[in-house]
Amino acid sequence: MKKLIFLIAIFLLIGCGAETAVPTPTNTPSGFDRQALLENITNQIAIPAHEQFVAAAEGLETAVTTFTNTPTLANLEAAQEAWRTAAVARTSLLTFRLGLVDDSRLHSRLDNRPARVSFIEDTIAGDVTIDAAFIDSIGSSSIGLGTLEYLLFDPEGGNEVVLVRFTEAENAERRRDYLLGVAQNLPLKANDLLQVWLPEGENYAQLFIAADMDGGELQGSMNMLVNQMVADLEEILGTRMGKPTGNNSNGQARPDLVESPFAFWSLPRIEATLEMMHTIYTGGDGLGFDDYLDFVAAKGEGGVPLSQVIDAQFATTRAAFDEIEGSLHTAVTDQPDQVNAAYDEVRTLLVLIKADMANHLGVTLTFNDNDGD
Image 1 (cartoon, rainbow, N blue to C red):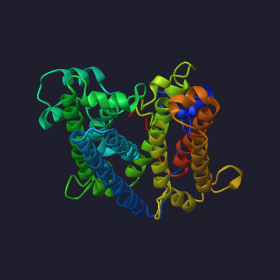
Image 2 (spheres, rainbow, N blue to C red):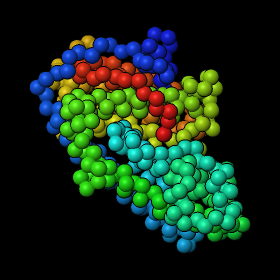
Image 3 (tube, rainbow, N blue to C red):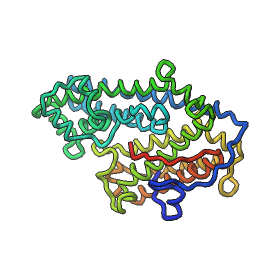
């Protein structure tokens, strides 16, 4: 899954901070049960994924609690593994940043990067009471998964150095308090995010299915979902892979710009976003965009059903990522060919969804100003 920087002609198609030029959409197809598609994606994919993230956040809180109570190397490693699980679970939700979900700003509270290291360290060295109220009052770059990553990992000193900070170093107890406070806040915000979707909360699931946010027109929700898929692919190409590979930073590899600079967990996070996007596309075990494309008899190059072309591109993209060994942080310099190959496959996937799929399904693409996760 790779980075997207097109030459002049392709810039007009893909866009780079300006309005995108895409083929004029065909008329919205009638007869296909779009509401059933939206119900399946919402109830069978989106809500379960949010529930899984809540469980992962709770698991991370439990692991951090154990570590802060008994700060051993084994408990630190368990907390780190719980962080990896939660980080993947969160980035799998990115395509569902829609409507009320996006308005809530909860994703920012869960994982705003980069972590504000100076504030975190000043707080630990200071005398403010580190309690739940304080943690909830501070900025998003000082809490969430980015902050937990900073506290739990040290790519230079390793786990022995991390352990010393929590046990022997000055303000070790306050460091444990800060770590625990952020870990306890995470499942609260994860559950708030889930509640946006649920009937007992803001019931966005029903709004999304009924498309009430767009005058009751079902295509409104279709537009939002496809546009978010496009935005997520552009974000991978422009920021998440584009900056560290150099494709979006003057051609020079910048391993320091990976999104996971302490745990070196950038590739699994990116792959989680792509895997969920593929699940949305296929609908899992139910209706997906592939079924919609088959309904309108959309064809790709050579007359192959477009649904199959896109599905195959997801598989090709996944295979390209599998060829990258180790972390993105090291691969951008040690394996540039493999990383660039994955980047190019993401770019191809973007073209298929942004131009081909959107055109055949009558989706109106809108300019987005998504600047990273």
